[in-house]
Length: 276
Length: 340
Image (cartoon, rainbow over all chains, first blue to last red; front, side, top):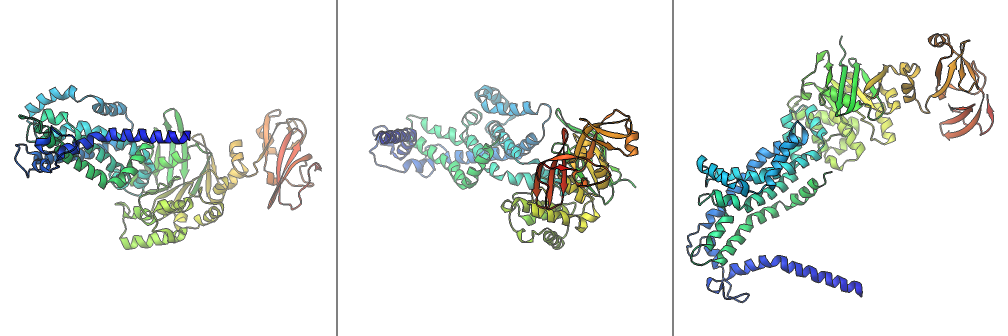
């Protein structure tokens, strides 16, 4: 009897937490469905409308905010950042896993420190530099600065994947008559495929979610959704319904990506995790 | 003519651990050379040094007389079978065997490669498994695929690292017999690493015993068996192990056991090599003892008798020391009786 009560209490606590955790999401969905005139006067009973989505996606009344462009910018900048990080990071991770040289650990730690040092500490100098170099508000500039976010992630996670591979596999390839480069591309790289999928998704989400860099280093041309969604809050009165709709729309790409590579993701995340 | 594989003063250490400590080794053209040693002796490191996968801190490796310092593994033209198999897990058995034949160094036209792979697979009894991914093969099957990947290609030398160790006993014996009959193995210089002395004796044209990164002795199986360099080599071969009985050389050319329990006449060369009073050990292989009258007779008490089917192993007490004795007799002596 006592055990049953405990089980019920535990379930109740879980449901409470579930409601607590998901309420912001539910509240955003509700907000995004409200018509502008009921925005501040109602909680749960209102006439639902998709007007906010129409406006955000550029089909409704023009609010002067090019949200679709922000959306495309986000896609270009995030995919570009992840792509560049993979090109640089995969060979770097492989080298870090296979060869220890003087200072290699320091180098790796420096890379990691980009992840935990607050972006705000470097943002002012970066802003000045970007203004002078003409990188301000450009795709190249954003892809470049996002390397601070994506590169350490990819190098560190992929290094543990490469370390898990027996070096004898590549040695066998060398003796089969392949060069070191071919051994990397034909043997090592295909075997860490699931890891690449997992880490790419993770890096994409981090790049997509980044707020501070686009906030300071872009103005309109290369601005991303995270900052763009805020533009609806300016003006005479904040349009929370539009902001909510914009936020929900911008969740779609990471979500779609996660669903498509889910198969690799579970394998990938668990594979890299078991590192002694 | 220079030897096919020649190692001179190879030194290799990992941090504070010394793997190879001034190793010298020569393997002749077409020879089947067995390297025998306990685990951690440096056998695998020796192979990898020959293959160019490990770079020694000092010493030189030469193949067919050419110094291999700085020569990449793919330019050395040697094939190696790894103890861990090192098969490509994302490919089928067929693709693993085909890997060397698709590489820029050993490329063959697809049809020709197909034929070679078929022939090697049949030779190793894996013809039916070629379509399977290597993850779905048993350890024994994987080991044969790994061996096949070596045999399928032309090579200046084969380096085989315990290629039979994971097979079950029956298959191991069959493969051991077949291995030397394989044409490619017969024609190609082979450096074979094992910790199994039976394998080394059965396969090696010559045998090298390695210990703590140095070669203790090299020689034919007769030389190694009858004139072991030291007790380590003597103990490495033969089951049950050789009996080593401590004692001294006496003034009148005999061996006196440490507890003065028995005395054995020594051959003149043995006497010449040791002054009277020198503490020595005498080694007697269990198989060389027999029951009954002979040139040298010892008297002892049967301590333990083990009937092992084909042979019977008897442990005999000789005063303070024990002596193992192996005989083929069907009726072993019971415990207790005095043996003469």
